[in-house]
Image 1: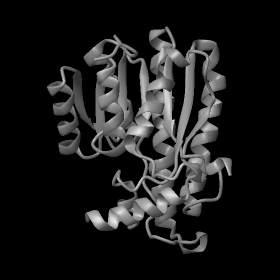
Image 2: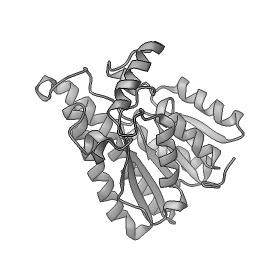
Image 3: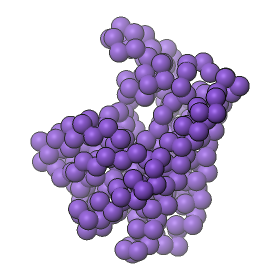
Image 4: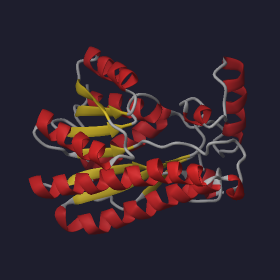
Length: 262
């Protein structure tokens, strides 16, 4: 066990799989007490079990981030369980619903769902975390999962637009929160074929051979030559939420093997 987050109370959304699970495990490994939140309760209970088996402290909370009442209850759950909230990692996101969809192919329902989860979910989390941080005093940290698709035109158009909105909200929260000791940053991953996220959009199968081919294709798009993993993102997250980044705010950190540096 490390001590980068010793004594801190953290929430990780989307903690039932992928980047969320990897980050919740690393937060706990570094000493944080973690609220593991997900719309699916069984997978997030498994994350909690893994944390507890490794000697950490965590609780599972069901949360639909597109529902403001759910998000407010999640924030309250952290304060009730651990006395305060120090870190919120807004990690939940959904992909473009159909592989290769162009802007004009998106339906109103597609648009509403992408905006409701990817952008509104981050807005609700950021809003209620800031309210909590101001109420309890002592500052706090917000980390959001953005995307390289919000930095350059890559991936679905509406998906990228929601991530661009997340990036702008992150910067605004950083500036507005600064007088209160509140920091806000975002990680911006590139293609992650092994997390289940791409599969949710029909972009990857689950069989080993197909995943290998997708990984090779994805990695070929990154100058460093390999796909991005959930663990890559978790390591970036640990830095940004820790006191080692005490003077870092408003940053959009690509975790992309050099993709946007081309």
